Length: 396
Image (cartoon, rainbow, N blue to C red):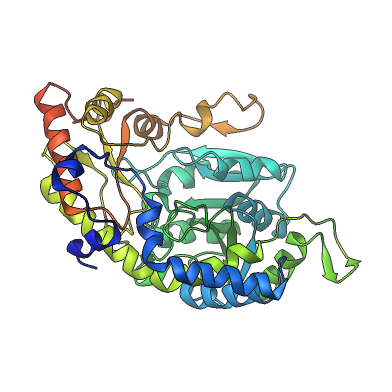
C-alpha cells in the first residue's frame, strides 16, 4: 500500500491545523474507518445468530487463520497470555519444570510460565534486534528445562533454525510467542508454523487486532490441538462431559466475527507498515539507533523501536512537538517487583537491560501519514541538535 493512500483514511483537515494535531503512536480509528460498515455487518450477523460463545464464527475464523498461517489447526482462546499458558499445560509442563524465556519481552511471556507452576529461566537477547540470543538460550538449558519460548518481538521472527537446532537434542518444546508478528515470515515460512505451537494475541493494537481481548494457538499437532480445545472450554470433550480440569479461556464469538472482517486486510496493512518503516530509515538522523532487520526475517513492524542513551529526554522533546511515543519494555522482565527471588532464574543479562533502558517506540500504524513521519524525523533531529544523542554503545 502506497504511503499516499493513507491520507484517505482520515477526514480532510486544514493543513495548518494538521500541523497542530498530535502524531499518534497508534490510531485505530484510521484503520477501522474504511471497513466500519463491514464491522457493523459482522455484529448484526452475530446478533441475529444468537451464537455468542464458540460456534460458527469462531470455527470459521479458526479455519481462516490456520490457512493464513499455513498450519493445520488454530484454536481460538481468550488472550495471548492464555494461549501461552494453555500451550505449556497441553505439553504437560508444570511444577518442577523450567522454561527458557528472553529477558527482553512483555512480562506476559514469563507470567504464562509461572501460571502453570513452572519456573522461567531468563536468557539474554541479541544486541542488534532485541530477539532471543540462541547462544544465550543454549547456555540456559539445564536438566529441568522442558521448553523454550521464542518471542518474535517488534514484528521480526527469531532465528528459528538455531532455536529448533538447540532444542532438538534435549527434547524441548519450541513455543512461538507471535503476539507481535501476525503475517511475519522466517525463511519464507509463516510465523505460527515454526515450532511445536504458536501463541497469538489479538489485543486491539496488534497488527491483527480484535475490538477487545482475544488470542489463538496455531499448531500442526492434531493431538495437541484437541487437548487445547478441551482445556480452553472447561475440560469438556462433549457437552457436559468434562474429562480434565480445564479453564474458561474461549475466544468470544463477537471478536472472532470482527477478526474475520479484518484478516483479509492484514497483508495490506503490513505492507503499509513496511513502507512507513522504510521512510523512517531514510529520514531519521544517523545518530538514531534503529533496530536491525535481517533479510531472512523481514519485519512487519508491529512497533518501530529506536534506542537512545537518554531515552526519556528524547521522549520529552518529541512530546513538546506533539508526538506520542511508547516504551517497550521497561523494566526488563526480571526487574519487575512482582517476582519473588525463588520464582525465576537469571544470570547476567546486559543486552536485555540495555534495551530496557534505551528503547523508544516511534509512531507506527498503517494509517500513518507521510507528513507525520516527516514531523517525527524533524523532532528527532531537534532532540539531537539540543544535545540528546542516540546510544552509540550498549550500556550494561
